[in-house]
Amino acid sequence: MPAVIAITSEKGGVGKSTLAVHLAGALAERGLHVALIDEDGRIGSSAGWARRGVAHGTPLSFEVLEPEEIRPRRLRDLDAVVIDTEGRPRRKELRDLSERADTILVPSGVSALELEATIALAGFLNTEGGARRKLKVILTRVPPTSGAGERAREDLREAGLTVCNTLVRQYAVYLRAAELGVLCRDLPPKEDAGGRAAQAWADILSLSREVL
Image (tube, rainbow, N blue to C red):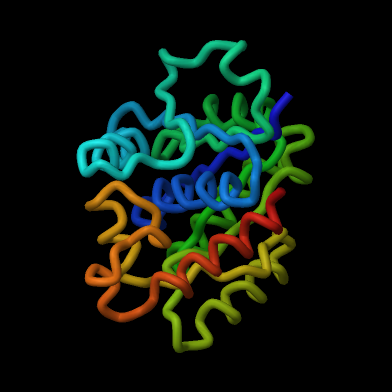
């Protein structure tokens, strides 16, 4: 059975779907057979990302499935499944997630409000059986040149949370990658005006090794 990595958050704007698409891509680059399941039916950001890639003639290197497309035989031979969960899931959905997933990855920004929301979500998940050992926080949209990410990471660890060492820094290349339906590593040079795509991709590869 594949390892199941669920990405969830109760706070919008933390780059959940961007993280899901890129994490799946990083696992695929490392030679793993991976699929991404888009469970966010209200928005469908990951599925839309994949459709834009196909429309531009640059399909993603892994399958992006919607829930109605899932078949046990389709998943059986995979090494990993990444789930892009519904935004702001209900408590019942979080309980279900804690049972289905091997790893629950919670993206969080570095502001005080985002950290408080992350700590509250972790507090709930930690009451759900074995969810505590599955939970990892990943700091996203981190300003590249300040120490905000490092400070937030230590604050969360002092609050008792497991936090990834990797910081996913905020770069404009992610937005352009979403518009074109590609991974940031696959942006044409003319679309990488700041030359940040390689740095952004290095963050994602580093995270993938921490997760699996």
